[in-house]
Amino acid sequence: GGNSVNETSSSMRVYVRIRPQNPKEIENNTRSIIQVVDENVLIFDSKEETEPFFFHGSKQNCRDLQKKQNKELNFGFDRVFGCNSSNEAVFEVSTKDIVKSLLDGFNCSVFAYGATGAGKTYTMLGSNTVPGITYLTIVELYKQMEILSSEKEFNLGVSHLEVYNENVQDLIQPSGPLHLREDSNYGVRIPGLSLHRITNADELFALMAKGNKNRTQHPTDSNAESSRSHSVFQLYIRMTNKLDRNLKIMKLSMIDLAGSERGSATGCKGMRFTEGSNINKSLLALGNCINSLAGGLKHIPYRDSKLTRLLKDSLGGNCQTVMIANVSPSSNSYEDTYNTLKYATRAKKI
Ligand code: ADP
Ligand code: MG
Image (cartoon, rainbow, N blue to C red):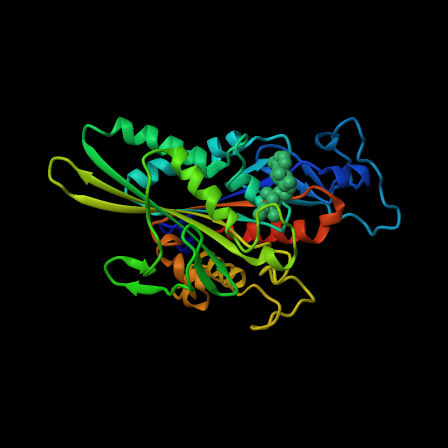
């Protein structure tokens, strides 16, 4: 059609995941502000009280009569995961087929976006008993590599870093701050970043868990200051064709973003963003890159932050990108959830 700006080879699939209400929200009997309509649609701030948020027999039905009229806004996404969805279910829909893209030679990235406590780390990393989608994706990758093993040879290496206050730190072998280099042959390089060979998904999970312990924000710590680090886990795949020795290098980036509660890059009204103030620069820059890609602009401001410089070769272009927007269903998180849904909606246009 005539609308060619949206028909570039880049694509972003956008999912929303709603976590269950936590014990505190249940105890306070907070109102649920999201109604899941079907697989693709949710209503934010609906007039109706809805079934999925009954939990442990307590009914989340306390309408606040003081409140202004409900917004009752419809949002559509590639998929909406309700509060009963498992990490497996999210994986099946969101990242399983990314493995195919990787083995077809594309860089892929997966972002977990959302406010602190919305479920980003639960989704990406998970725990020993409930592994997250990174682990599940790598298990699938090993399955697919096995199928190809008569034709192809594979070498896998992983790195895990964090971007905190615009400093890049190695999470597996912590050292001083690291610097980014742009290399015309290899894309973005980070001299000094440790790279670790892995031979199965369990080794990867162990490395990730170790890396997360070294995060400025411990994943279970909801301390406001420390929720401003981005965790970037990268998997490099070297795939050699056994017949002609042709080598391809692909990269999968799994990014557990800083909490979006401040400077949420949604351009929400009444908030003024100025550089150097209490804003997460990388999160803001990511939003600007996403908006530029979505608008079909030629100039994408990758250079504006460490995170976007780092992901320049994994965002836009021929990359497969997935965003999982994590939200809480509770009225306590009204603004955060609203901002996250708006940010995710904008990303969908890429
Ligand atoms: P974030 O990383 O976005 O700050 P977390 O992933 O740490 O948030 O989640 C906050 C809390 O909610 C954690 O205790 C986590 O175990 C729990 N949680 C998040 N998502 C889910 C879910 N889908 N099902 C069950 N518990 C969840
Ligand atoms: Mg977290």
